[in-house]
Each structure stands twice: as structure tokens, then as C-alpha cells.
Length: 377
Image (cartoon, rainbow, N blue to C red; front, side, top):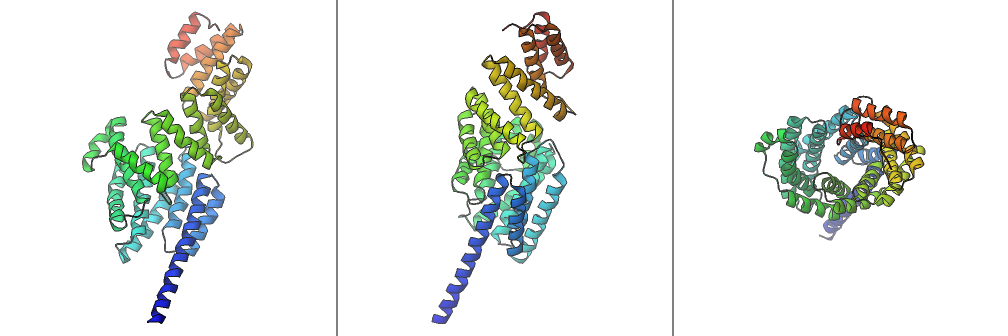
């Protein structure tokens, strides 16, 4: 009897040590992904796949590296097929596990996550039918995983995302509403509460929950104070993640905290100049624009003009297919600065170009106004 007990204790200790090793590797790798240390994350999750070949975590988070490459430049579809291929590997691996053990919670969780991220990619590309299809397949897996292990806090991320967006998306994107008849009703308030719970208690999904909360409060709830609180947490935890840093700057601009925003956007430009991963021309362009508006508000016209000229130059590179509001508004600012400097001919050229471009926030009306009467300080 004592011998059997000893064997059991040794076996349990071995399992516990393995789980600790897995958790340590995955936690390290997740931090590397959000820190935009993709090479390091590649190495970490290669170790997970080597040490735990039968666990889907290694393949799943390998796909998450690609997901974050996409998030750093949402307009580019360069990595879309790679992400789909890697998510398919996760789904196939989880299916093999579930064929052997239909109650395997890890397989359910990671398959649901893979389907969810494939759906999120489809939604980013406005392919609502495929997004809804993946969501429809993912949701039961999340429910089953939670029924089998209600202590798995990370599973609640799926509930939170679903509850929030099932109510929000039909309001924001009306074409999606007919598809929602096949899904349970959402509950935005409950979804936020679930995301907050995961943000406080999650093991693997903590930062993803905080990211969802930040973007939801910024884009849909228009609650700048809440959005800033999450942006601050994420930016301080991952100071070299350009997405978190840019959001923190934007939110400060919205709150008219231009002094704080100027420091953030100056940091972004410094990191671009130093070649930090993810600090692209598009990210720098935004920083140049907001620094231009900051110095314009301070009547430091020489500095404002310098940043607006940088923004204009970058916009002509990154907006090759379609002009942006950054370019249009920058041209208006440059026109007004030229007027203040008494360079009327140059100002007129800026205003006329604005009229040749798509309209953003009454830009045509403003350009026509300044063409009739020069802008004055």
C-alpha cells in the first residue's frame, strides 16, 4: 500500500512539474509576442512544440505570432494565408486529440480559440459570412470546455468577446444583422464584466482581455477614461508595442491632454528612427501628425510645419492606393500655416489639392472657405 502511494505521489509530482514547465514557457512566449519580440517568441514556442508535442499550445501560440504581425499593419494581407494555415494545423491537432478523448478540455479550448481567431481575421477583411461561420463553430466548444472545467478562467474570454460583439456588431455593421438569427443573443454589459474578470485573473488570456477592453472602450463605448486606463496598463507592461503606445497617445489627444500625448508620440518617432520592430512608416506618420497639431496649438508654427511636412511626405508613401484623413488634414494645416506666413500662392496650392482629394470632416468646405479668404492667426 505504501509503495502504491509513493508511486502515485511521484507520478503526481511529475505531472505538476510538467505543467509548471509548460506554463512557464507559454507565459514567457506570450510576453514576447506582446513585446513584439517575434524571433524570441518563435524560439520559445518551438521549445513548447518540442517538449510538449501532443499539446496544442505550441502550435496555437505560433499562430498568434503571425496574428500580431497582422495587427501591426492591418491594411496588409501579407500574412493572412500564413495565419490561416497555422490555425488549420491547430484545428487538425485538436481534432486528433478529441477523436481519442472527446472530453479533453485543452483541445476544446485551443480549437475554439483557433476558430475564433480565424473568424476575427475574416471580420477584419469584412468577410462576414466566414466570420459568422467560424464563430458558430467556436461557441459550443467554449461552452463545453467551461462545463468540463469551470476553473479555467481563460475560457471566459470567449464568452466575453461573444457577449459584447454579438450585441455591438449588428449595430455598427447592419449587413451582419441577418446572420445573427443563428446565434444566441449577446449581452454587452455582461461581456464587459467577463472581459474584466479575465483581465484580472486570466492565465494565458489576461492581456488579450485587456486589449479587447481598451479597443472596445475607445472605438465603441467612447469612454476615454476607461480606454486610457487599459492603454496605460498595456503600454507600461509592453513599452515597445507600437499598437499599445499609439492607442495611449490617441486617447490622450481625444482627452485634450496634448502635453502627455506629445511625449508619447515623440517616443514613437524615436523608436522608428532606432528601427524598433513594428514602428512602421504608418505609425510614424500618425505621430508626426499629432505632434504637428500639438505645436500648432502652442503657436510654434515652425515646429508644427516641420512635423506636418514629415506627415505629408510619409502619407504620400503609405497612402499609395487611397488618401487618408491624415494627408487631407495635413494639407489644410500646411495651407493655413502658409497663409499666416504670407505665402498665399503656396497656401492656395494646398487648398486646391484638398479639393482634388476625398472629403474628410468637411475638408472641402474648409478649403473653399480659405480659398475665398486667407486664413489668419
